[in-house]
Length: 236
Image (tube, rainbow, N blue to C red; front, side, top):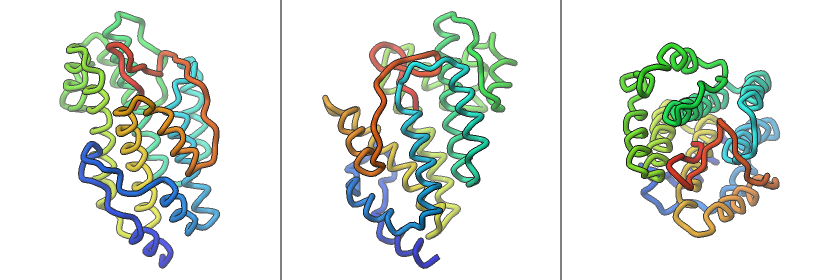
């Protein structure tokens, strides 16, 4: 507990919004602070980091590959909070994938075993799956796509993640969960800031590698991956 207090107290506050900037801590400093964690705790944060790295890399994957990855993570992750973050991220990306198929008139994609997938199947013939009350961000997200504003659409996705994870953070004080949620939101800060530079993706890759010490896989795309170049949007 003392270690968690010392670590959390050493981390500068994150901005109230992911687009408020500047990034309050460098990657190298953050990496140094994480060295306070035990090996067991680092194993958990590495699981989360590995998922984020996998999630943001638009590698060519079939829907079945994505579903298999979801099932694998559910078996492997033992920390309840990390599993909750992973499930929420899969929920958002599943909605976006289904919305993209619906907008393009494509068949309904194969969906992972999530409550949102049941909702999508049940309401497939409704615009936006009739989800405005259940998932308020969907309507604004779809409007941004209709107006061909992919960056605004990406903003809405990040806003959903940021707001949910910030509310979760209020439940913890100087605990390991506080560290996990700090890292999760730090990743959003860097992903958003990386979009504002010509070499943004490379900058983000370099920073993550600095912290995690892992290589980055080349870019490819599939039904559950999303590109920013046209009226589609990068995966959250």
